[in-house]
Image (tube, rainbow, N blue to C red; front, side, top):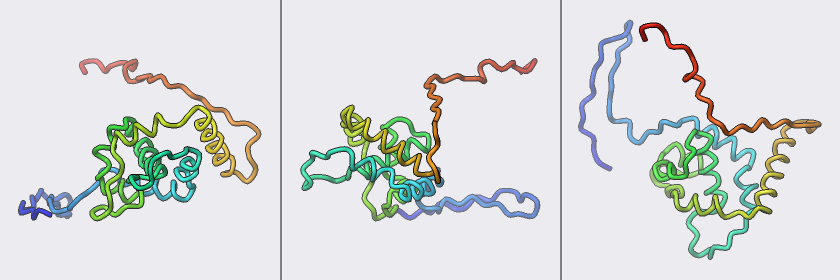
Length: 172
């Protein structure tokens, strides 16, 4: 690991609080919340449950990433706002994402790459997708003491940029 010799930078105090910028924080993540999401995902067993519904035809001798690990990384990336699978090429080494996926930040194996994720996003058949949908509905219903009589899904994939329609301040 390279040694950082950059000296700290001191800012003017705010109130009586001393402010210093140091560049010795090591590897950091901008997605600290992913660790909480990872803990919840593990507790609910979402990736494990869905992985059991997708057959894995790969030779086990050559498997680096299990289906549940691939799904977990993708699920957490989407939950953190990374909608494209190519974001995994950067996130695969992110210490927060690695911890959320049960890997050590420095010594643990990296997460799956974009090509691996893309292959598995397109792998399930329609029948398997339907099974996964039922599994998610079952998981949702099991979160209630008594399952709801009905569930309304308001699905709208259009992006309405409401800011574009707000009046602009005069002179701004």
